[in-house]
Length: 311
Image (cartoon, rainbow, N blue to C red; front, top):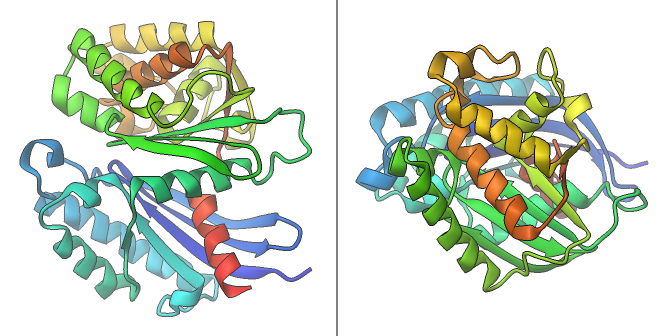
């Protein structure tokens, strides 16, 4: 085996995440060394102002400083861009002052953050979610969706991407746009799904695979877990009826009731209802009877992209 140690950072609208892993491109094996997530809400107010808020930038930079220390602790020189990739998604793609974000990250991590397109984001998500599915009982083609804070990526494929599209619906964006107005959210979500369907067939895939924090949180609630357990969540299969039940519960619950759910991350309390509504709408639109939940997503795809480049 020929393992390569790499670090990957995914900076989204709501959270920033780190993966340090040893990868063998020949066998497809990934040995996870460090995986962590910090809620930084980088996209705070972006939909309204078009700019990244100063306090949101500082929260993100603080997390970057922590991640730089973690990367160094695993023996990776964070100035070695050949073994570290930092990918930024929806919020920093939209912001007028994204240069402040780029300069700050470069100063801390010594690497240029890549503000990638929605299409590339979708391909990385697909790679991360499906690389380990070959030979499993899950049948292709796969329709993978990555439900983020500001956008959702849809990707259809088997062993490669056949169609992909990113649309501007996510838990943070829907919450900031519409508050508690679920009717307005539903209309916005429907319009976005119509746009996605122009490029990606949303019906007919054999397996629907959902990624990211909203999906894993809803799954954890549906499974009745007493605490967040990524092993139990990974590749769990959640029926449509349970997703609907959890969504209705979250939308009806008060802030304190949502916060008291054992698996709920504090940073998701005020946006999980909108995120669950997006998830439910996707399942209803695709006609899927169940959802396959993956803990491996764009972060793993970013790591594999580094391994390919250094192999």
